[in-house]
Image 1 (cartoon, rainbow, N blue to C red):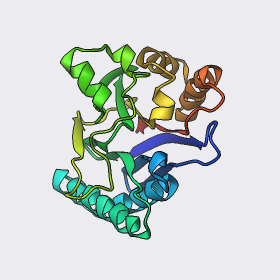
Image 2 (image 1 turned 90 degrees about the vertical axis):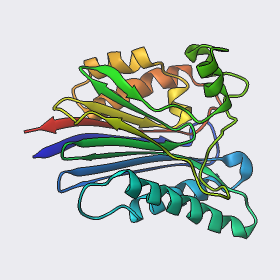
Image 3 (image 1 turned 135 degrees about the horizontal axis):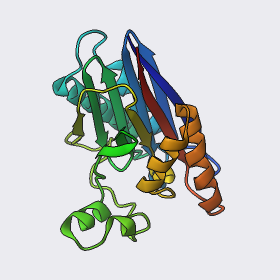
Image 4 (image 1 turned 45 degrees about the vertical axis):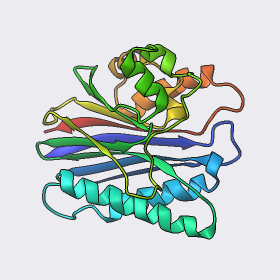
Length: 241
């Protein structure tokens, strides 16, 4: 039977409001995890992220394998739900990253710069690619991955939920999950302050999903400035019998 050891964290950080949202559920061998980051500079970011999370999960098939077409419908529904809420006069938007684990399948789907990481043997084997101007600069070779974290265009996103014409979510397929495989979903307020090598080191040191998350948060808390962004994360470790 597939059992997933999982932990969640979300905090307003140095801000007055938390515009991140997290969701985690597992049942009958399936795990669904979602992290969404509302775009506060547009107003209503907290509303947008919660709407996105609710719509993504609500539209998932209840039974059977969740394929790419089903995931696309979920993101389309989330995009429409955020757009509908904009009718109140606030142009709210949100990023989102979703992990689906089920028998023989592991899939990330994301839009924006909330990230998903997959680990095997305590090393990163898959990582989502940000939909941002600075990420495009990395792909062109204009800047390095290390420079991306605090690049001047870091917050300029190419794709988000809450735009006319639909959304362009990206699927990241992962090899069938094995015992000991681990996954991290996080908002940019989390990954900005911890590098990928440190994520791997803390996974080796940890005895559980919660322990891994705590070790990473301890690093981040030592580094963040006073008025730092909201930060959220979900950690998952496969424990198969």
